Length: 317
Length: 292
Image (cartoon, rainbow over all chains, first blue to last red; front, top):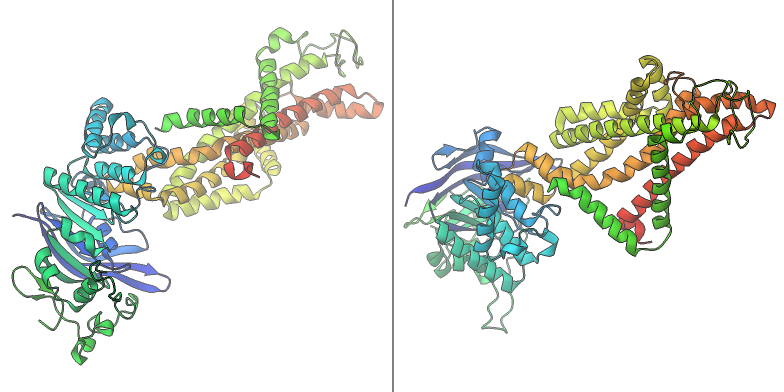
């Protein structure tokens, strides 16, 4: 498989009044064409910022302060805005978390697609409409809904539109930022299923950003675990769920409630996520880690390759 | 679609109009009727005015209202009814064109300033705020004096007075709409700045324009009347309510009430028409206001 995305030492900081928030801190990342990666982390771990940074859409006061994003041979951080616009939507696109607010309330559902297609390709409105209708059909929306407005759609259907919009130009990479978090469980599965199907159909790479680790095994090939702005474990899904290596990953899996042992007490990870303005010294998980040693609190562990493309940021390996 | 938004909004406004009862509905209908009456009067002036408005001596000087001159004659023996009818032309031309100009300039500048932000926004906002800081009439007087007499100078000075109102409103709206997720989503699929402003942001700020437009028109009628009352702006050969009011005012001490009363009444009526229409529209189109 050929390499699609290579990220080296990416850092994104938010310059807030309270100080500099290091939302993404020197992250290295590799991904192949056609691969799906589940990027998992808790709120504030920097996973959404990471996704936005790839599209260079980090909202101010945030800024990419270092590192390289090499997408299909092109370095994105040094591109000018006009060239970046050509990449957004056409090569890399995004599905947003909240489908109620990510569609323009005054624009017809179908016109969202038409506008996007016409922004990138030199086609007439009729041709764009034809393609838009085809795309809507792909995500299970009937052609007669083309002229409806977003408020006439249910949440699940709006997310289908969001997906159609992201896939309209057949991009190589889709970043899905919590695409199912605002949907109910049944619809969640329909949407994930749809995304999986379309991803295979179009042979795209996908980064699925989520805080819900339970949806990852059904859809992703690999999992990337983020904690406090850093990537702490990168593994293929099967080996991770068999045996997570990083103590945080372990704790995370243990805290997923299991329906078979209903009398089991709910486990959780003690302590709070660290303050990213003043992150803990050494390993950022050390204050909450049951295995932490003096060394963990003093120096930061490197990313250690434990074989078969498995990386973990912990001194125990 | 951008070009469908206004008709759709008017349609939904009208459909609500037919369903709802109450004062605001009456306001809009009455206001619209008054405005339309003046519009017809202005268009049909050559047909319905019994005399040439500028011709002196069609009657004796200061004839009180009588069957031949329903509103009497003025100090030069001109027919006041004819002058009032012709006067509606200039008022409508000046207010409507200055409204059109100021809303277009204000909206475009507001869109750009709000969207681009940064230094451009700071400079434009500062400039607009300093214009806005002057009382409208004072600014209009200063500009009219500077620009000299004529229809265009008056239109320009009224435009300058009202541009900041649109600018400030639109800029504020843009600042909030620009932060919406759908704008970011459009950006994420490759929309450029122009598409974002005109296809996504602009349609979402349109709804606030019409109300301000008609309320401003009411204000503009008064400002124009004040300007010509002070003898600034319009040349003497154009029949104009404000100027006639001024002339009539001089005769008031001699118990000659008709030359001033009728033009004054027209100013009040047209202002009332625009205000009623604007207020009623605001009540109907703004769901937060209307559900009291």
